[in-house]
Amino acid sequence: MDLSYGDEAEAFRVELRSFLEEHRAKAPQGGSGLGGRPDQRTMDWQRLLIEGGYAARNVPREYGGFGAPPDPLTRIVIDEEFARAGVSRGISGQGPDMLVPTLLEHGSEAQRQAYIGQTIQGEMVWCQGYSEPEAGSDLASVRTNAVLEGDDFVVTGHKIWTTSAHFSDMMFCLVRTEPEKARHAGLSYLLLPMNSPGISVHPLMTMTGKAEFNQVFFDSVRVPRQNLVGERGDGWKIANATLVHERNMLGSASQIDALFQALLRLARTETRDGRPLIEDPLLRDRLMRLQGEVLAARWHASRLLSTKLRGEPAGVAGLVVKLTGCELAHQIASTALEFLGELGTLYEHSPHERAGGFWAFQQMFSLGLIIGGGTAQIQKNIISERGLGLPRETRGDT
Image 1: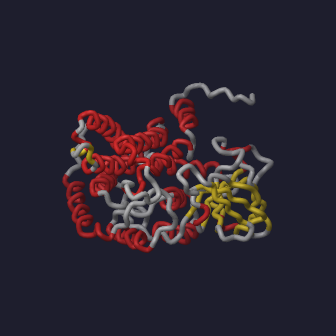
Image 2: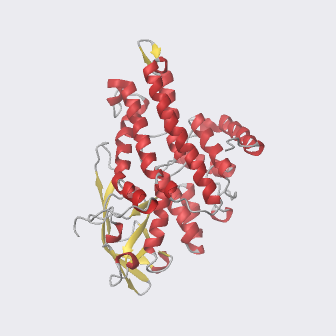
Image 3: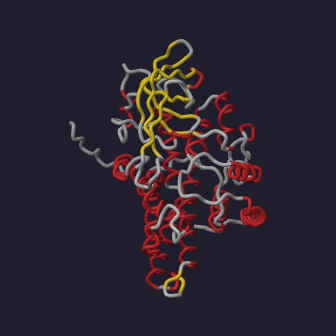
């Protein structure tokens, strides 16, 4: 295995380092989770990153991206250098990381023109309407229905655990349009404006003390027919394409690496008995063990990128990303709290808190991601059944 990057990739690294050194003062400061809509500083930074080819790099220029062809080495260099510098990667989330690639794969030309540019610029914020009170892990049980009346779908139903719905402009939503068909065949994928009459949003408070999630109710909400992605009944296929991007986002090796680099900076700057934490051999051993797992995640991501560019199926290698990534992120945040001791518990602007309470928030939020987006238990079933070919788990109701 040749792990060298080659002259072209290393020249790109020099270019990127120079960019970060020159412009890092313009970058927004990292927050502690899903704080709301991107502010003007964040949007200005995003535009600068897109112009340089460091964000939306592979999104075609006609949709507002940089337009570079996919290149795994370039992507790895970008991940490494932003993590090393501790600088914001720009705008991410359900719109840029989940919906945009889905529209590039399945959307119409009109939908791509209407939504992609505003989304990657941060001007349009999206939420995901999948889970329902009785359709979470069993997503094919979705009951929210959409009946076609003239040129509109009329949507009625209830979604839950809808991240960011309380400040989103749009929702990509899985609805049932053919109730007479089999569960998987009767679903469709709609794009809903969140200011439509008949939509009501009710925030749900979590243990972080914030309301990242929401319940969303639809009371005869009219959605234009042209907001259907793909064909009627294609929803299951398209929703699963989005879920692949979601799992890659939640288990992102670059995010894990950035989180670990933040832990290293904490270990070098935080002291105990007048000495940096990293000088404690026991704590240093903990860091080395975590670093081994972070490196494994990074090289696994490289493997998946190479597989994708060769047009080969990822197989079980692609199924483990969400499970391992979310659990590793939680381990890193938990380690930071252990390093900080009682200071790590301080939160919400205590005078002695560290990093604005980031680690306390991250530890709680990352635990939620082990449950959200498909629980760890469901992920293990997917790996065993679809990846390893083991017998399906016996259902209790049968």
